Picture (spheres, rainbow, N blue to C red):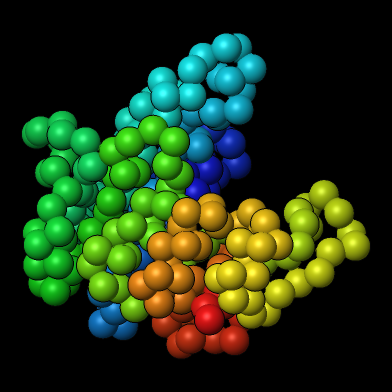
Length: 226
């Protein structure tokens, strides 16, 4: 999930009305009996491209971004707990007592006990995106599917927000997604999911039925698989 979603109409920072609504959506998905984990980005806290324009090194930008994801994760956790939904933040970077350090077995136990698990700080390393963190956690935990909730309703050959002459892909293979440089997901993330046979489902979070679509497996968005 992009962190930018949590900014609401403010475009930056946290809009707690949006956070609360998102938590309600997550609670609804969990109530279907689905084991649910979230990898959250930090785009609402820092715009990496803007920082690069001022000569700040990418490694430093990514470290700041990791901290932004922790803030977002803690906000989601608080909103879920307010709804009486058990939730836990697991961070790839040590920061007790704010969040527990990521541990594979602990994550599996939390999921099986009904917790929503929120993975923060990406992979813990610069130069790896939220997409790669999601693919990595899904691979480590043997999850059934990665859902990327974004601003568009699937994968196109180019940005549908900028161009009119776009081609929509209802389904595409991992290899073709990499070959065609379809930028909705990072190449490393595509490759990880391909290696571990984890399908990627790209949907629009702006669709009012996005929760229903996930829980009922609706034929919407784009599926990436072999």
